[in-house]
Image (tube, rainbow, N blue to C red; front, side, top):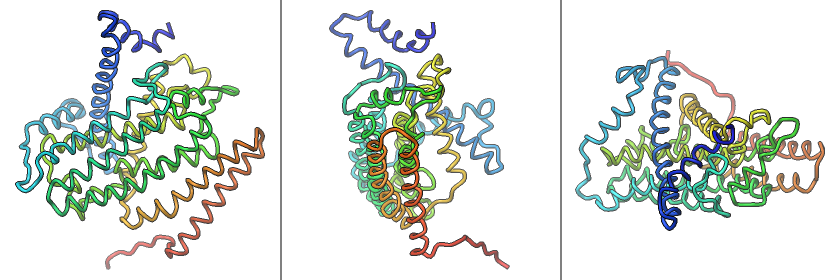
Length: 391
């Protein structure tokens, strides 16, 4: 019974496919899986938007959505209808074809990442040996979509927003890649399925997740920072800095095209959270050995929604950075820490088992963090923040 519940979606897919001729079953299986992804994550997008608006409302001492449906639960549907019925305005001087393709490309590439994410035991659309490489190849296409949106609009604010977005995304994509390399070094594979299986072991009931190691914790923190910047979330939402750029690279978008950008941002947030869960949090594995009877897909989506909660929490807590602070942080602090973490992972691997490697690896990372942080504060003359009030 437990195994049936864990594999319920796999069994349902096989049951549906068996109604078709053998020659059609392979293609039908892929289409069913793709349809499930395209249905599930937009539904999660609607839930996440409602949760974010209600959560930020509570943080800011207001109610949030409370008119459409009980507790505002139908607000995402109202927003979707509004986006569909609003007029689609294209600037006269814009490149209409590229202007149309930009949001479509952004959403498509965001969805493509889910193809290689194992969302449960035996629940992966395409189990590639180089799944992580495929994921990053798809993720790199989002920069092209953002630049297409800014360039095709023939608007200086849009172009500036696109250039800022591309500079930010390329800078933090380097960090994202390097923070993931330590996992590949330890798992010995680029297959996301094998990376999850490498963490699906327990000692005294506790899991062997990579986040519970010095190099894994450091890699996860740097991955989370880069993921926040890659998805343009606060405090790294510089491409959409309303105070300087009106709305950034999508200033000249309205109606359903703007809704596609909004959808693409959240789908990318789900996707990058799912990858972080797979790399550092054991993917679909349970947090304790006595909870392995719970279906694996429940654990994956629980970890995914916990990551989304942290994104929302940071948006309601942290102020936006300046552009120079954003770029300096990437190239002068996070990137060197990523490179050092690669060396620490190698030290961990070749020192063998024992408590000594915990001490050595933790000491290297902590000393480097303290030294680099102190050095940057000295050079930038950064000190305790003081507040002044008008008299």
